[in-house]
Image (cartoon, rainbow, N blue to C red; front, side, top):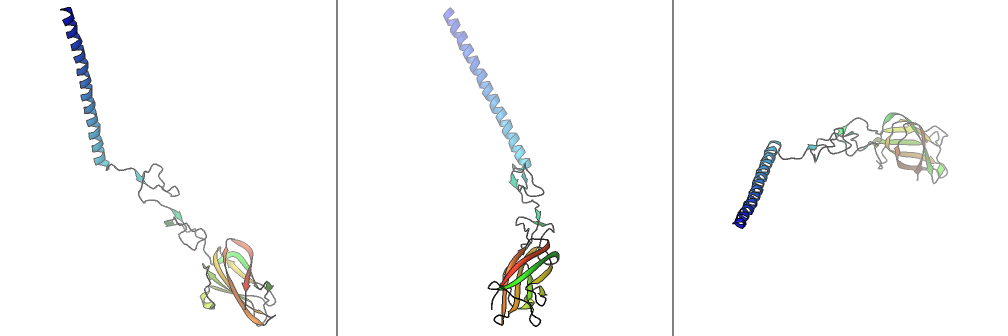
Length: 207
């Protein structure tokens, strides 16, 4: 009789533990369902999307917490491809472009040379320099294609190209080589980075 009682007690204890375990599982399922429902509700309200914003660190409105690029980046800089400080990523021009032109504080001292020999200006045939702004390719021989014209002084082997801004130029020169009594011409692209003072530049010419 005592053995039977112990068996019943053991069974009840085991059943009780199982019931408690089942209750725990039921509670866990209820909690998980609640969390899932709250997640769906949150997604419904927010669109389940990641935080959007500007992810480019160089932008003025860079958002370090953004997880998805939204195209809102504001990147200030020079947008002119001719500018020395051109920024290919800029989408707002900040007026900082350094482009070729007159009105600057730099003088290019251009020396036309034929096979290394200087070409001097003469009274009836002075060395002449034609300057094209924002160009690195030869514009042609027609003087009307150029933005500025500078004429050398009699007896000098160079021409002063005055008051230029930093930028890209093409310089075309014409002179007379008195050793062969022939007209000589030639040009060279030049990027002026100096913003004041003088810069010496040799311009090769040929007959």
